[in-house]
Length: 281
Image 1 (cartoon, rainbow, N blue to C red):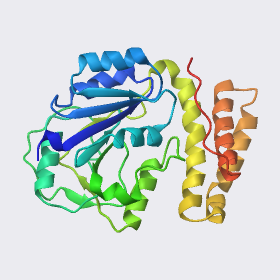
Image 2: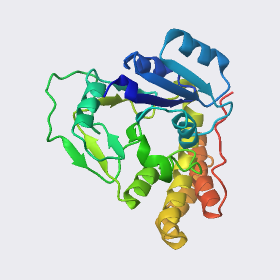
Image 3: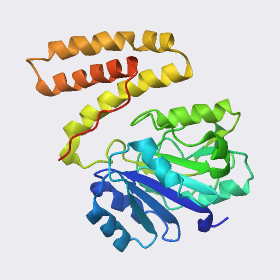
Image 4: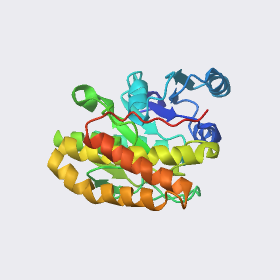
């Protein structure tokens, strides 16, 4: 296996502050598809001019995480792909250790890197064959996909705009009796929650709260039933309502956050789509 067997897909949205660190950590022989959730032609030109291995697709609208990743994955022609967040950085041996993993001939659909990398320092340890574990799901910041496994099941559920789409994908994979692994030899650092420029922090916080609640109800309704999902979120409805009212005159930002939580839950419970989008103009 070589770098020609792997394509990296990165979904971005107002990610100028982080994407360069990510791209600089990727070997220039590996093809990278960046899907930008806007019509930012200047951003596309900048990336493609600076990085010879990068193709930037403009979605021309904010498609969200899952739908934009699907757009990129449909353009992948290699046997394997790596879905990567723009605020992630590959450590030096990350891709090499992925190819060592492939030599082990493990039957897998999804492979995750170490889930507990807290710094960018390198370690010189040799590949440890005991650092491979089966799991039910992995974090979505970095996911290696064995592309042939997804021919029938498909990729992300595009009803999700943000949150739990990778959990949903992992559950569907497990329902098909396919395998998900974590290989702790593969180290990818993730800043976490910092894919978007800090200039838009409050609006992004509102968006995250709305979609976390929408996705929580939708996921549980989809995989269990409406009654179970309702019981699960029932306390959260009253908590969000109480805190929205409590902060109404005391703290505008907190009032907006809890109001968005309540809105996301109610919209999901009445069957409305995940329509809310951040206003970042």
